[in-house]
Image (cartoon, rainbow, N blue to C red; front, side, top):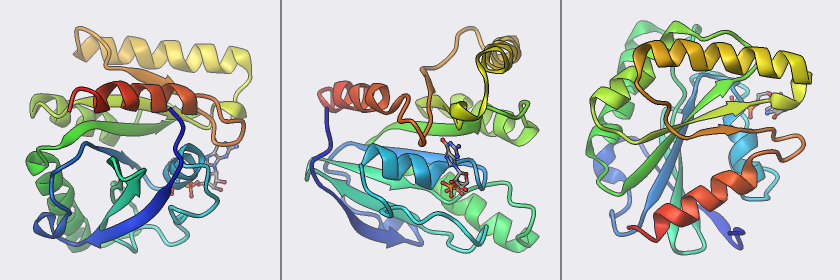
Length: 198
Ligand code: GDP
């Protein structure tokens, strides 16, 4: 699948403000600076559809993008910011939690993880809570172009081992780079396949 048209649809501060659940949607989430905006822009072949986050924690909104009038790509607020206050963190925690617990048309939540860094407690805790709550997730490793072959193999093996300590099997996993485009085609094919099941 190739995306022909991608346009901003709306920002919502509450789940009740989100668009009607009349088509499949796919959400992207990760810690600040993980490369979420870059990946969204790459998938949509647009330079600045999703705004790269210069001020962490500033926009605590659920952003819907209309893709080819047939599905939504959803940019969720990041989590685990060090710079935001506890109250703000609690707020966007609630928005994300509410969204993830209630969107019936959410086909998959793509959890982005920086392939260069070791497993972070907050990512693991987040993924575990998603699985416990029955939210379908896929793991997307970002910035793979920044690693050489050896580092990449070592890091990915370590992740796999750590995750399999908690889970019986891995969810779908994608290795991506917004620089060289690795993994975009695979993610879009995965979405295409799920779209046909909506
Ligand atoms: P966000 O905060 O998760 O939306 O992250 P951004 O998309 O704004 O990316 C954070 C920084 O990482 C920016 O400087 C990007 O240029 C850089 N970046 C994002 N993805 C990649 C990637 O795949 N490869 C490389 N080399 N840099 C990336």
